[in-house]
Length: 246
Image 1 (tube, rainbow, N blue to C red):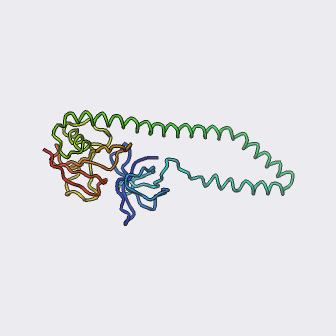
Image 2 (cartoon, rainbow, N blue to C red):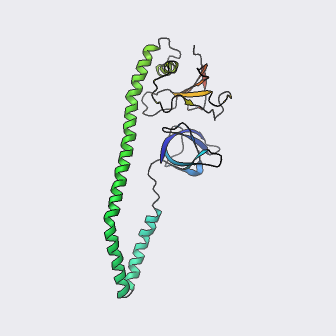
Image 3 (cartoon, rainbow, N blue to C red):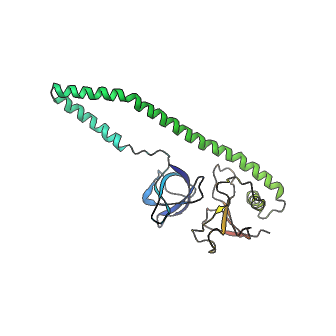
C-alpha cells in the first residue's frame, strides 16, 4: 500500500490528486474511492492502492487514513457461522458429533500457524511505521541544516521570508534540497493556474514551513532550464504569485 498527501481537491466535481511519497507521478482519485474518517482536505495524509487505466494514467482504487486494509468480512462471516454449526452439531447424531470433534481438533492444530502469521504481520507493520517515523525525524534536522547553509549564501533577500529566500538560493546553486525525491521534479500545471508551456518546462521545489513535520503547502515553481521565471504558491497550487529573481 502506498502513502502520500492530498495535493489537489475539487470538492464540486469530487476528484483530486495525491502527491505520492518517493514517486514523481501524482495519482488521480475520485470521491467514490475515499474511505476516510474525516472530510478530504489538501495536505491530508492518506494511504492508498492504485493501478493504471487504459490510458496509462495512475488512479487510486481505495483511499484510506490508515495503511491497514481492514477488509475482514470473510473472517466475520465465518465467525458468525460458527455458532450455527455448533448448534447443528448438537442436534445431530453421534456420527456427526464425531466428525465435528475431528474438525475442531484440526482447527486447534492449525492455530499455532495462524498465530505465527499474525506475529509476522505485526512485526512487519511495526517496522513500516518505525521507518516512516524515522524518515520524518531525519528530514527535520536535515532541512534545518540546509536552510542555515543557504542563508549564508543568500545575502540579498528577495522576499524577506527566510525559508522562501533560502529555497531560491538552493535552486540557484543546484541544491542540496530537503526532499531530493520531490524537489526539482516536473510540475505538470494540471490546475491550469500558470501559462501553458511544453511538458517539462516547469519544475517544483519545497519551501519548508516552520513547525510542520511534512512538506507543507508552500512551493516554488520555476520555468525554463536554467530557470528564467519563478512562481510562489503558499496554498498548494490554488494560487501563484510571480517572484522577481535576478
